[in-house]
Amino acid sequence: MSALTLKNVFKTFGTTEVLRDISIEVEKGEFVVFVGPSGCGKSTLLRVIAGLEDASAGEVYIDGNLVNSVPPSKRGIAMVFQSYALYPHLNVANNMSLALKQEGVSKAEIAERVQEASRMLQLDDYLKRYPSELSGGQRQRVAIGRAVVRQPKLFLLDEPLSNLDAALRVSTRLEIANLHKQLDATMIYVTHDQTEAMTLADKIVVLRDGRVEQVGSPMELYNKPANKFVAGFLGSPAMNFLPASLLEAGDTRTIGIRPEDLYLADDGPLAATVQHVEHLGGDTNVIAFVGEHQVTVRLFGQHDIRPRQELKLGFDAQKRHYFNE
Amino acid sequence: MNKARTNPVSAAAMHGALILYTLIALFPVFVILINSFKTRKAIFREPLSLPSSDSFSMIGYETVMKQGDFFLYFQNSMIVTVASLFFILLFGSMAAFALSEYRFKGNLVMGLYLALGIMIPIRIGTVAILEMMVATGLVNTLWSLILVYTAQGLPLAVFILSEFMRQVSDDLKDAGRVDGLSEYTIFARIVVPLVRPAMATVAVFNMIPIWNDLWFPLILAPAEETKTLTLGSQVFIGQFVTDWNAVLSALSMAILPVLILYVIFSRQLIRGITSGAVK
Ligand SMILES: Nc1ncnc2c1ncn2[C@@H]1O[C@H](COP(=O)(O)OP(=O)(O)OP(=O)(O)O)[C@@H](O)[C@H]1O
Ligand SMILES: [Mg+2]
Image (tube, rainbow over all chains, first blue to last red):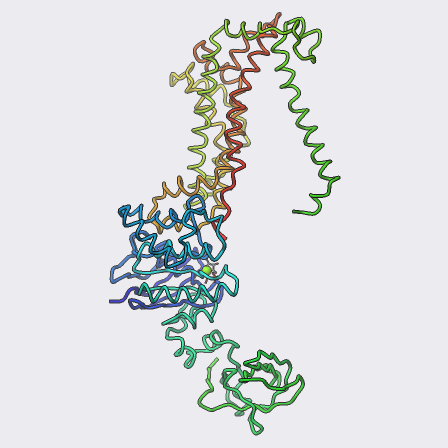
């Protein structure tokens, strides 16, 4: 039985359609990432799953039960909010135990679960502190701890890392991945960062304008993008798009080639002029123009390439993607 | 710290202005206090001098204690003020929560209707209010005053509190919902603590006019057993002779409770606990 099933879910606010015909299946224990540009409806979808917004149409099943009219606290979910949303007047321990008290869990059990969660998240030393006395990363861990103690069937995380600085984001990302393994829980994670999506997900759901563009494992999406949007969204640097007519006159399609699939070849079909070179040590990114089309070439290792230099680029035929847009 | 603020000249100017304002504001209170301890002659001869061994006299306080039921008036004022504030804050915050939290038909119209009272002085309706109180048999009860003051304070309370409640993060309320708190608990445990400074402001704004009011006690509850302090003190102000000792003593004593209430509320104003809730 799947942990979460969405069937033809729609959501409208007044006259604006925010979610259109969303159908998704999430298996038990899966780590699913919803990814898409800002404003595409990721948070709204998560709130519909949580029960904080009613779906305008469609059905939401959690663990096989229809939950459309079940209040959030009875859905067996826990949510981590983008803004942490810690109760400012409660200390860390009470923040974590409030929901359990509300459910009527026994005191001994509450203490045990809080201790377990705080050990897992290294919060032991902060249990008596108030949210205002914690750093951003600590607050984030408390927010996650508050979800963990409830032992939910489904974790919902809304951009949990977006308020952290770059270094902390990488380490917290790792912690979340570990947590998922330890708890063996089903997690749904929202982000607009494709790196987070690629590194964490068992399954990625790409959203655009309230519609599901593609669902699949990170590598499926990377290797077989269903359309130009998905192709351009995943991968960094982003995929290069060129009109196919450059290679074959009369072809109206668009051709897509990933930066790492381009290489220098004296007999290559693409003639490019270098505009800028990024030396990253391990990699070298060459930004060049093929006619008026900008392309990025990712070369392994260090290369002595200068701006305004003329290059010939080649690629393997099976590594190119065609799009009808 | 802002550089302009630490500039010693502007800091001195700012403190000078504030100290001057404090002196001006406290001066009348000071004059009342010192004169309440003087003989009648001394009050008129040298109103600004401190009570000396000749001019010191407790006659004013003695008169107040003897005449009328001063403690009863005191108690009435206290009951009316505290009860009115309680109802203003209770109903005001509940209405504000509903207006700010829930999207329903007529939300905006309801908000405007509730705020209308800010622009219309309640005293315009005195005759109608008196008729209603007579009809309901509430004349000469403290309830008549409490109800009127609650009605008088609610519009501004709803207006101010709903503005503040709109600023309480939605995520925080939603976190409460996911954690299984009822709407009442969310209101009482999450929202109210966060808008406590605003509630204290509302309380302070309403407290002094209620405590000082003479109009409604005179019209709605002039009976001996329901007289408020302000009304009770009027017996010392005659058409021809005014017992200044007694008036000043009564006023001095009337300042005290408001001062205490003010200290209680202002501590809430200072306490800022919102930081760290949401990033
Ligand atoms: N309560 C609401 N009323 C009207 N429109 C809303 C409401 N909530 C969200 N929307 C609209 O729905 C769309 C999707 O919003 P949502 O918050 O789900 O985006 P998102 O994908 O989470 O974006 P971000 O990555 O910026 O968080 C937006 O265009 C937003 O304006
Ligand atoms: Mg969002």
